[in-house]
Image (cartoon, rainbow, N blue to C red; front, side):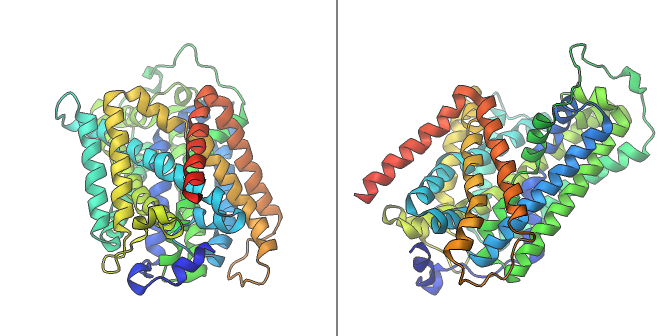
Length: 446
Protein backbone atom coordinates (compact mmCIF):
# COMPACT_ATOMS: atom_id res chain seq x y z
CA UNK A 1 0.00 0.00 0.00
CA UNK A 2 1.31 3.49 -0.86
CA UNK A 3 0.90 4.98 2.59
CA UNK A 4 3.18 2.41 4.23
CA UNK A 5 6.25 4.03 2.75
CA UNK A 6 5.37 7.28 4.47
CA UNK A 7 4.60 5.69 7.82
CA UNK A 8 7.79 3.62 7.84
CA UNK A 9 10.04 6.42 6.65
CA UNK A 10 12.73 7.67 8.96
CA UNK A 11 12.15 10.79 10.96
CA UNK A 12 14.43 12.77 8.68
CA UNK A 13 12.33 11.84 5.66
CA UNK A 14 8.93 12.69 7.13
CA UNK A 15 7.30 16.11 6.98
CA UNK A 16 6.92 17.89 10.30
CA UNK A 17 3.85 19.72 11.55
CA UNK A 18 5.17 23.27 11.19
CA UNK A 19 2.21 25.20 9.72
CA UNK A 20 -0.55 26.93 11.66
CA UNK A 21 -4.11 27.64 10.56
CA UNK A 22 -3.19 31.21 9.60
CA UNK A 23 -0.38 29.86 7.38
CA UNK A 24 -2.85 27.54 5.65
CA UNK A 25 -5.38 30.34 5.15
CA UNK A 26 -2.67 32.62 3.71
CA UNK A 27 -1.61 29.84 1.34
CA UNK A 28 -5.14 29.13 0.10
CA UNK A 29 -6.13 32.79 -0.25
CA UNK A 30 -2.82 33.52 -1.97
CA UNK A 31 -3.37 30.78 -4.54
CA UNK A 32 -6.99 31.62 -5.32
CA UNK A 33 -6.92 35.43 -5.37
CA UNK A 34 -4.53 35.80 -8.25
CA UNK A 35 -4.40 37.65 -11.53
CA UNK A 36 -7.70 36.06 -12.61
CA UNK A 37 -9.82 38.44 -10.55
CA UNK A 38 -8.53 41.27 -12.77
CA UNK A 39 -9.39 39.46 -16.00
CA UNK A 40 -12.56 37.39 -15.60
CA UNK A 41 -15.09 39.97 -14.25
CA UNK A 42 -15.53 41.52 -17.70
CA UNK A 43 -16.13 38.04 -19.20
CA UNK A 44 -18.69 37.25 -16.51
CA UNK A 45 -20.41 40.59 -17.20
CA UNK A 46 -20.48 39.72 -20.91
CA UNK A 47 -22.39 36.52 -20.12
CA UNK A 48 -24.90 38.00 -17.65
CA UNK A 49 -27.73 40.32 -18.60
CA UNK A 50 -27.91 42.51 -15.49
CA UNK A 51 -26.09 43.57 -12.32
CA UNK A 52 -28.05 41.28 -10.01
CA UNK A 53 -27.31 38.20 -12.10
CA UNK A 54 -23.67 39.24 -12.34
CA UNK A 55 -23.22 39.43 -8.56
CA UNK A 56 -25.32 36.29 -8.01
CA UNK A 57 -22.91 34.20 -10.10
CA UNK A 58 -20.05 35.19 -7.80
CA UNK A 59 -22.11 34.29 -4.74
CA UNK A 60 -23.00 30.91 -6.26
CA UNK A 61 -19.34 30.38 -7.15
CA UNK A 62 -18.41 30.87 -3.51
CA UNK A 63 -21.13 28.44 -2.41
CA UNK A 64 -20.00 25.75 -4.87
CA UNK A 65 -16.38 26.24 -3.80
CA UNK A 66 -17.37 25.92 -0.14
CA UNK A 67 -19.18 22.65 -0.88
CA UNK A 68 -16.09 21.35 -2.64
CA UNK A 69 -13.86 22.51 0.21
CA UNK A 70 -16.01 20.62 2.74
CA UNK A 71 -15.62 17.44 0.65
CA UNK A 72 -11.87 17.99 0.52
CA UNK A 73 -11.80 18.67 4.26
CA UNK A 74 -13.13 15.15 4.91
CA UNK A 75 -10.42 13.61 2.73
CA UNK A 76 -7.68 15.78 4.27
CA UNK A 77 -8.83 15.02 7.81
CA UNK A 78 -9.11 11.27 7.22
CA UNK A 79 -5.99 10.84 5.09
CA UNK A 80 -3.54 13.66 5.94
CA UNK A 81 -0.68 13.30 3.49
CA UNK A 82 1.71 15.54 1.58
CA UNK A 83 0.54 13.80 -1.62
CA UNK A 84 -2.86 15.51 -1.41
CA UNK A 85 -5.01 14.63 -4.45
CA UNK A 86 -2.46 12.01 -5.49
CA UNK A 87 -2.85 10.15 -2.20
CA UNK A 88 -6.67 10.29 -2.32
CA UNK A 89 -6.67 8.92 -5.88
CA UNK A 90 -4.20 6.20 -4.90
CA UNK A 91 -6.37 4.94 -2.06
CA UNK A 92 -9.59 5.16 -4.07
CA UNK A 93 -8.50 3.88 -7.49
CA UNK A 94 -5.08 2.30 -7.14
CA UNK A 95 -1.59 2.84 -8.48
CA UNK A 96 -2.10 3.35 -12.26
CA UNK A 97 -4.54 6.26 -12.00
CA UNK A 98 -2.60 7.89 -9.20
CA UNK A 99 0.58 7.69 -11.25
CA UNK A 100 -1.13 9.30 -14.26
CA UNK A 101 -2.30 12.16 -12.06
CA UNK A 102 1.14 12.70 -10.54
CA UNK A 103 2.73 12.48 -13.99
CA UNK A 104 0.49 15.09 -15.60
CA UNK A 105 0.70 17.33 -12.54
CA UNK A 106 4.50 17.20 -12.58
CA UNK A 107 4.95 17.60 -16.33
CA UNK A 108 2.09 19.91 -17.32
CA UNK A 109 -0.52 21.07 -14.79
CA UNK A 110 1.44 22.45 -11.85
CA UNK A 111 4.61 23.43 -13.65
CA UNK A 112 2.58 25.04 -16.42
CA UNK A 113 0.72 27.10 -13.83
CA UNK A 114 4.00 28.21 -12.24
CA UNK A 115 5.41 29.26 -15.62
CA UNK A 116 2.22 31.09 -16.59
CA UNK A 117 2.12 33.02 -13.31
CA UNK A 118 5.80 33.88 -13.72
CA UNK A 119 5.07 35.25 -17.20
CA UNK A 120 2.17 37.32 -15.87
CA UNK A 121 4.57 38.80 -13.33
CA UNK A 122 7.09 39.49 -16.08
CA UNK A 123 4.50 41.18 -18.29
CA UNK A 124 3.58 43.70 -15.61
CA UNK A 125 7.06 44.12 -14.12
CA UNK A 126 8.24 45.16 -17.59
CA UNK A 127 5.84 48.12 -17.45
CA UNK A 128 7.93 49.54 -14.62
CA UNK A 129 11.41 48.61 -15.81
CA UNK A 130 12.35 46.84 -19.01
CA UNK A 131 15.53 44.80 -19.29
CA UNK A 132 15.62 44.28 -23.03
CA UNK A 133 13.58 42.67 -25.82
CA UNK A 134 13.03 39.51 -23.76
CA UNK A 135 12.23 41.36 -20.57
CA UNK A 136 9.08 39.38 -19.72
CA UNK A 137 10.87 36.06 -20.07
CA UNK A 138 13.87 37.21 -18.07
CA UNK A 139 11.63 38.33 -15.22
CA UNK A 140 9.74 35.03 -15.42
CA UNK A 141 12.94 32.99 -15.24
CA UNK A 142 14.15 35.08 -12.31
CA UNK A 143 10.90 34.51 -10.40
CA UNK A 144 10.84 30.73 -10.96
CA UNK A 145 14.47 30.38 -9.83
CA UNK A 146 14.22 32.81 -6.91
CA UNK A 147 11.02 31.37 -5.45
CA UNK A 148 12.28 27.80 -5.87
CA UNK A 149 15.47 28.65 -3.98
CA UNK A 150 13.46 30.47 -1.31
CA UNK A 151 11.37 27.36 -0.67
CA UNK A 152 14.42 25.07 -0.77
CA UNK A 153 15.83 27.14 2.11
CA UNK A 154 12.87 26.04 4.19
CA UNK A 155 9.11 25.96 4.53
CA UNK A 156 9.32 28.66 7.18
CA UNK A 157 10.88 31.08 4.66
CA UNK A 158 8.25 30.15 2.07
CA UNK A 159 5.39 30.54 4.54
CA UNK A 160 6.63 33.95 5.72
CA UNK A 161 6.96 35.13 2.13
CA UNK A 162 3.48 33.79 1.37
CA UNK A 163 1.88 35.72 4.26
CA UNK A 164 3.67 38.91 3.16
CA UNK A 165 2.64 38.51 -0.49
CA UNK A 166 -0.95 37.71 0.49
CA UNK A 167 -1.11 40.76 2.75
CA UNK A 168 0.10 43.01 -0.09
CA UNK A 169 -2.25 41.39 -2.59
CA UNK A 170 -5.42 41.62 -0.47
CA UNK A 171 -4.38 45.10 0.70
CA UNK A 172 -4.18 46.26 -2.91
CA UNK A 173 -7.62 44.85 -3.71
CA UNK A 174 -9.03 46.56 -0.60
CA UNK A 175 -7.50 49.81 -1.88
CA UNK A 176 -9.30 49.35 -5.22
CA UNK A 177 -12.59 48.86 -3.33
CA UNK A 178 -12.02 51.99 -1.23
CA UNK A 179 -11.01 54.09 -4.23
CA UNK A 180 -13.96 52.88 -6.30
CA UNK A 181 -16.58 53.42 -3.63
CA UNK A 182 -15.36 56.57 -1.89
CA UNK A 183 -13.09 58.59 -4.23
CA UNK A 184 -14.72 61.18 -6.46
CA UNK A 185 -14.10 60.34 -10.15
CA UNK A 186 -11.81 62.65 -12.12
CA UNK A 187 -13.63 62.07 -15.43
CA UNK A 188 -17.20 61.40 -16.53
CA UNK A 189 -18.25 57.79 -16.90
CA UNK A 190 -19.63 58.59 -20.34
CA UNK A 191 -16.10 59.33 -21.55
CA UNK A 192 -15.12 55.67 -21.13
CA UNK A 193 -15.65 53.86 -24.44
CA UNK A 194 -18.05 50.99 -25.02
CA UNK A 195 -17.18 48.60 -27.82
CA UNK A 196 -19.78 48.71 -30.54
CA UNK A 197 -19.82 44.94 -31.04
CA UNK A 198 -20.47 44.15 -27.37
CA UNK A 199 -23.88 42.82 -26.38
CA UNK A 200 -24.43 41.21 -23.00
CA UNK A 201 -26.43 38.01 -22.81
CA UNK A 202 -27.60 35.57 -20.15
CA UNK A 203 -25.32 32.55 -20.60
CA UNK A 204 -25.08 31.38 -17.00
CA UNK A 205 -23.14 28.25 -17.93
CA UNK A 206 -20.27 30.25 -19.42
CA UNK A 207 -20.46 32.83 -16.62
CA UNK A 208 -20.06 30.08 -14.01
CA UNK A 209 -17.13 28.59 -15.92
CA UNK A 210 -15.24 31.88 -15.57
CA UNK A 211 -16.33 32.38 -11.96
CA UNK A 212 -15.32 28.87 -10.82
CA UNK A 213 -12.02 29.15 -12.65
CA UNK A 214 -11.38 32.36 -10.69
CA UNK A 215 -12.22 30.52 -7.46
CA UNK A 216 -9.94 27.62 -8.42
CA UNK A 217 -6.90 26.64 -6.38
CA UNK A 218 -8.25 26.08 -2.88
CA UNK A 219 -7.78 22.31 -3.30
CA UNK A 220 -4.00 22.87 -3.11
CA UNK A 221 -4.45 22.94 0.69
CA UNK A 222 -4.61 19.13 0.56
CA UNK A 223 -0.85 19.03 -0.05
CA UNK A 224 -0.02 20.60 3.31
CA UNK A 225 -2.53 18.59 5.38
CA UNK A 226 0.25 16.46 6.95
CA UNK A 227 2.19 19.58 7.96
CA UNK A 228 -0.62 21.37 9.78
CA UNK A 229 -0.10 21.68 13.54
CA UNK A 230 -3.82 22.07 14.24
CA UNK A 231 -4.69 18.72 12.65
CA UNK A 232 -7.91 17.68 10.94
CA UNK A 233 -10.19 20.29 12.47
CA UNK A 234 -7.61 22.96 11.68
CA UNK A 235 -7.64 22.01 8.00
CA UNK A 236 -11.44 22.14 7.82
CA UNK A 237 -11.39 25.50 9.56
CA UNK A 238 -8.68 26.82 7.23
CA UNK A 239 -10.63 25.76 4.13
CA UNK A 240 -13.92 27.24 5.32
CA UNK A 241 -12.36 30.54 6.44
CA UNK A 242 -10.39 30.81 3.21
CA UNK A 243 -13.46 30.34 0.99
CA UNK A 244 -15.46 32.83 3.07
CA UNK A 245 -12.67 35.44 2.84
CA UNK A 246 -12.27 34.88 -0.90
CA UNK A 247 -16.04 35.09 -1.53
CA UNK A 248 -16.36 38.35 0.44
CA UNK A 249 -13.38 39.88 -1.39
CA UNK A 250 -14.74 38.84 -4.79
CA UNK A 251 -18.22 40.16 -4.06
CA UNK A 252 -16.87 43.51 -2.85
CA UNK A 253 -14.42 44.03 -5.70
CA UNK A 254 -16.99 43.05 -8.35
CA UNK A 255 -19.64 45.26 -6.76
CA UNK A 256 -17.09 48.08 -6.96
CA UNK A 257 -16.50 47.41 -10.67
CA UNK A 258 -20.26 47.48 -11.34
CA UNK A 259 -20.80 50.57 -9.16
CA UNK A 260 -18.08 52.62 -10.88
CA UNK A 261 -18.13 51.40 -14.49
CA UNK A 262 -21.58 50.01 -15.02
CA UNK A 263 -22.48 46.65 -16.57
CA UNK A 264 -21.91 47.49 -20.24
CA UNK A 265 -18.55 49.15 -19.71
CA UNK A 266 -17.41 46.20 -17.63
CA UNK A 267 -18.40 43.83 -20.43
CA UNK A 268 -16.45 45.84 -23.01
CA UNK A 269 -13.34 46.34 -20.86
CA UNK A 270 -10.08 44.53 -21.58
CA UNK A 271 -8.62 45.55 -18.21
CA UNK A 272 -11.48 46.32 -15.86
CA UNK A 273 -9.36 47.21 -12.83
CA UNK A 274 -7.18 49.55 -14.90
CA UNK A 275 -10.30 51.27 -16.27
CA UNK A 276 -11.59 51.73 -12.72
CA UNK A 277 -8.36 53.39 -11.58
CA UNK A 278 -8.22 55.47 -14.77
CA UNK A 279 -11.76 56.65 -14.09
CA UNK A 280 -11.08 57.61 -10.46
CA UNK A 281 -7.42 58.70 -10.34
CA UNK A 282 -6.44 59.25 -13.95
CA UNK A 283 -4.15 57.58 -16.48
CA UNK A 284 -1.11 57.25 -14.20
CA UNK A 285 -3.08 55.07 -11.82
CA UNK A 286 -2.99 52.26 -14.40
CA UNK A 287 0.63 51.60 -13.37
CA UNK A 288 -0.59 50.85 -9.89
CA UNK A 289 -2.75 48.07 -11.31
CA UNK A 290 0.30 46.67 -13.06
CA UNK A 291 2.07 46.46 -9.72
CA UNK A 292 -0.96 44.87 -8.07
CA UNK A 293 -1.33 42.20 -10.76
CA UNK A 294 2.41 41.47 -10.53
CA UNK A 295 2.10 40.97 -6.75
CA UNK A 296 -0.94 38.73 -7.27
CA UNK A 297 0.96 36.57 -9.77
CA UNK A 298 3.95 36.42 -7.42
CA UNK A 299 1.72 35.32 -4.54
CA UNK A 300 0.06 32.54 -6.51
CA UNK A 301 3.37 31.37 -8.01
CA UNK A 302 4.97 31.02 -4.57
CA UNK A 303 1.99 29.09 -3.20
CA UNK A 304 1.91 26.85 -6.28
CA UNK A 305 5.60 26.03 -5.87
CA UNK A 306 5.05 25.12 -2.19
CA UNK A 307 2.20 22.69 -2.95
CA UNK A 308 3.42 21.36 -6.31
CA UNK A 309 6.64 19.84 -5.01
CA UNK A 310 4.74 17.83 -2.43
CA UNK A 311 2.85 15.72 -4.96
CA UNK A 312 6.20 14.98 -6.64
CA UNK A 313 7.51 13.92 -3.21
CA UNK A 314 4.59 11.49 -2.84
CA UNK A 315 5.28 10.12 -6.34
CA UNK A 316 8.85 9.32 -5.27
CA UNK A 317 7.59 7.46 -2.20
CA UNK A 318 5.59 4.99 -4.26
CA UNK A 319 7.56 4.48 -7.49
CA UNK A 320 11.22 3.34 -7.34
CA UNK A 321 12.22 5.12 -10.54
CA UNK A 322 11.31 8.48 -8.93
CA UNK A 323 12.74 7.56 -5.53
CA UNK A 324 15.07 10.57 -5.42
CA UNK A 325 12.03 12.86 -5.31
CA UNK A 326 11.00 11.35 -1.97
CA UNK A 327 13.96 12.74 -0.03
CA UNK A 328 12.66 15.05 2.67
CA UNK A 329 15.02 17.52 4.34
CA UNK A 330 14.09 17.41 8.01
CA UNK A 331 16.08 20.54 8.87
CA UNK A 332 14.32 22.78 6.34
CA UNK A 333 11.07 20.73 6.23
CA UNK A 334 11.08 20.67 2.41
CA UNK A 335 11.29 18.04 -0.36
CA UNK A 336 14.43 19.57 -1.86
CA UNK A 337 14.88 17.36 -4.93
CA UNK A 338 11.18 17.53 -5.75
CA UNK A 339 11.43 21.33 -5.66
CA UNK A 340 14.51 21.25 -7.91
CA UNK A 341 12.87 18.99 -10.52
CA UNK A 342 9.72 21.11 -10.47
CA UNK A 343 11.81 24.26 -10.92
CA UNK A 344 13.68 22.75 -13.86
CA UNK A 345 10.47 21.74 -15.67
CA UNK A 346 8.89 25.16 -15.02
CA UNK A 347 12.06 26.81 -16.32
CA UNK A 348 11.89 24.73 -19.51
CA UNK A 349 8.29 25.87 -20.03
CA UNK A 350 9.33 29.49 -19.55
CA UNK A 351 12.09 29.02 -22.14
CA UNK A 352 9.51 27.55 -24.52
CA UNK A 353 7.42 30.62 -23.89
CA UNK A 354 10.41 32.79 -24.81
CA UNK A 355 10.75 30.99 -28.14
CA UNK A 356 7.05 31.10 -28.98
CA UNK A 357 4.54 32.72 -26.68
CA UNK A 358 1.73 31.03 -28.59
CA UNK A 359 3.24 27.62 -27.94
CA UNK A 360 3.54 28.37 -24.23
CA UNK A 361 -0.07 29.56 -24.00
CA UNK A 362 -1.18 26.41 -25.79
CA UNK A 363 0.61 24.22 -23.22
CA UNK A 364 -1.09 26.03 -20.35
CA UNK A 365 -4.55 26.48 -21.87
CA UNK A 366 -4.94 22.85 -22.78
CA UNK A 367 -4.18 21.51 -19.33
CA UNK A 368 -7.72 22.43 -18.23
CA UNK A 369 -9.47 19.19 -19.34
CA UNK A 370 -6.88 17.08 -17.52
CA UNK A 371 -7.25 19.14 -14.36
CA UNK A 372 -11.05 18.93 -14.24
CA UNK A 373 -11.00 15.22 -15.07
CA UNK A 374 -8.92 14.45 -11.98
CA UNK A 375 -10.83 17.00 -9.89
CA UNK A 376 -14.02 15.07 -10.66
CA UNK A 377 -12.35 11.78 -9.70
CA UNK A 378 -11.32 13.23 -6.33
CA UNK A 379 -14.95 14.19 -5.69
CA UNK A 380 -16.10 10.66 -6.53
CA UNK A 381 -13.35 9.35 -4.19
CA UNK A 382 -15.33 10.69 -1.21
CA UNK A 383 -18.02 8.09 -1.97
CA UNK A 384 -15.58 5.30 -2.83
CA UNK A 385 -13.46 5.70 0.30
CA UNK A 386 -16.51 5.77 2.57
CA UNK A 387 -17.32 2.30 1.25
CA UNK A 388 -13.74 0.99 1.09
CA UNK A 389 -12.66 2.23 4.54
CA UNK A 390 -15.78 2.26 6.74
CA UNK A 391 -13.70 1.36 9.80
CA UNK A 392 -11.41 4.42 9.59
CA UNK A 393 -12.13 7.25 11.99
CA UNK A 394 -13.13 10.41 10.17
CA UNK A 395 -12.32 13.42 12.37
CA UNK A 396 -14.36 15.58 9.98
CA UNK A 397 -17.27 14.47 7.81
CA UNK A 398 -18.77 16.52 5.00
CA UNK A 399 -22.20 17.75 6.15
CA UNK A 400 -25.38 16.56 4.41
CA UNK A 401 -23.64 13.55 2.86
CA UNK A 402 -24.21 12.46 0.08
CA UNK A 403 -25.91 15.63 -1.24
CA UNK A 404 -22.98 18.06 -0.95
CA UNK A 405 -20.34 15.73 -2.47
CA UNK A 406 -22.78 15.01 -5.32
CA UNK A 407 -23.13 18.74 -6.04
CA UNK A 408 -19.32 18.99 -6.03
CA UNK A 409 -19.08 16.17 -8.60
CA UNK A 410 -21.77 17.68 -10.81
CA UNK A 411 -20.05 21.08 -10.89
CA UNK A 412 -16.73 19.42 -11.74
CA UNK A 413 -18.41 17.45 -14.55
CA UNK A 414 -19.82 20.65 -16.03
CA UNK A 415 -16.42 22.31 -16.01
CA UNK A 416 -14.83 19.21 -17.55
CA UNK A 417 -17.42 19.33 -20.34
CA UNK A 418 -16.90 23.07 -20.85
CA UNK A 419 -13.12 22.76 -20.99
CA UNK A 420 -13.36 19.97 -23.56
CA UNK A 421 -15.96 21.83 -25.62
CA UNK A 422 -14.10 25.14 -25.77
CA UNK A 423 -10.53 23.91 -26.30
CA UNK A 424 -11.48 21.60 -29.17
CA UNK A 425 -8.46 19.95 -30.78
CA UNK A 426 -6.22 21.45 -28.13
CA UNK A 427 -7.71 19.13 -25.53
CA UNK A 428 -5.83 16.33 -27.30
CA UNK A 429 -2.61 17.72 -25.82
CA UNK A 430 -3.69 16.68 -22.34
CA UNK A 431 -4.85 13.30 -23.66
CA UNK A 432 -1.46 12.83 -25.32
CA UNK A 433 0.35 13.58 -22.05
CA UNK A 434 -1.87 11.06 -20.24
CA UNK A 435 -1.04 8.48 -22.93
CA UNK A 436 2.70 9.07 -22.52
CA UNK A 437 2.27 8.70 -18.75
CA UNK A 438 0.48 5.38 -19.29
CA UNK A 439 3.38 4.13 -21.41
CA UNK A 440 5.89 5.23 -18.79
CA UNK A 441 3.92 3.47 -16.05
CA UNK A 442 3.70 0.28 -18.11
CA UNK A 443 7.46 0.26 -18.70
CA UNK A 444 8.24 0.87 -15.02
CA UNK A 445 5.82 -1.86 -13.90
CA UNK A 446 7.58 -4.38 -16.14
